[in-house]
Image 1 (cartoon, protein in one colour):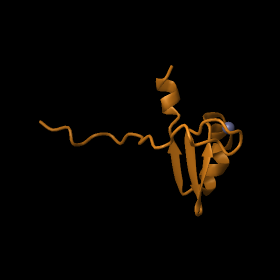
Image 2: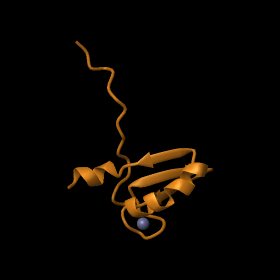
Image 3: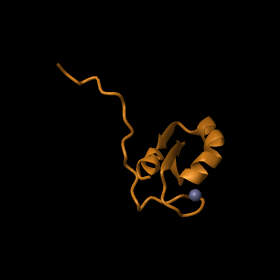
Image 4: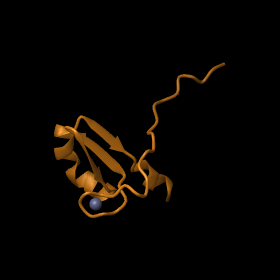
Length: 70
Ligand SMILES: [Zn+2]
């Protein structure tokens, strides 16, 4: 019996030191655009998600941590 086939889970790599580029709140979303990484809080991540996803090569979402914290 093995459980090696684990479902991919979000790796939580953002910390309290990572701040939203728009408002300075703690960042929960990171979008890689070109050579730079943009950080956003849950609010601004959602707000810019549609536009960002169109250009981002990577989308990192840790907003599930907010749900867990409730
Ligand atoms: Zn923000």
